[in-house]
Image (tube, rainbow, N blue to C red):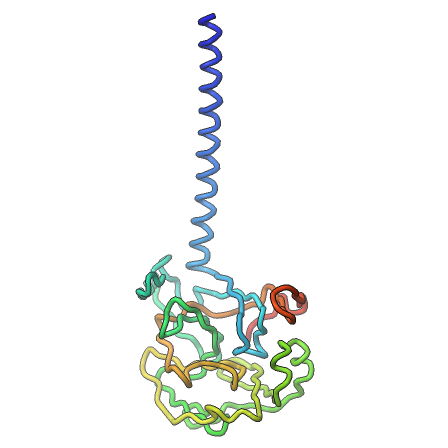
Amino acid sequence: MDTQETENNEAQDAVVLSKKEKFKKEAKSISIIVITVLIFRSVLFEPFRIPSGSMIPTLMIGDFILVNKFAYGFKLPFSDISLFGIDSDPVYLFGEDAPKRGDVVVFKYPSDPSINYIKRVIGLPGDSVEIREKRVFINDQPIDQVEIDGREIMSDMDEKFKNYNLKFYKANTGEHDHTIQQDIDNYYKTDYEKRVIPEGKYFVMGDNRDFSYDSRYWGYVDHKHIKGEAILVWFSLIFPFGEDSFKFRPWRIGKMIN
């Protein structure tokens, strides 16, 4: 009888030990996956969802984008995380590169680093920026732009923007050809007094010129606040009638961001 009980106890101990070992292995595997994902997001690429229309027509509300976080240099993982309202400076492992004029960048909103914004770089450190009657001048030269037919663009847009008197232009900003949108009836912030951008700062604007809260309102973006360059739309949904319904936009998947 004692022998039988001993054997049963040993069998139970073996089962418990087996479960513990299995749990340890699973926990280790999950931990490795979580750490890998966190490092991937911190150093390499990070997904974002576009919640507003400030970058229409380049980016639509409901686009899911991928941001290249090493476009301007490899950062020490988690060195630029903002916690409890305290901002930290990124640590670059192999030096850092500067954004180019025309890059679409994700950055920390200067007034609240816990919030991410996405805009296009218009002016670089040392550039002069001026806006006259909706026309942007960089170093006293107007950005090249040509009016284009916007009917195809509007078919992709959120319904609320289709009621405005819109015009579309093909513009060239630095190394990027892209499309901008203007509301002809909107005359707010059409002018911006000529200013020279300080060292280490950038002037950014949304491609949806008259519906963008950007450097015209709150000033420059510090280089240390730039998280990376937006490179690709990997998914896209629009919610035309609220969160209870949606429309899938497969034709936007794989669209490169210029």
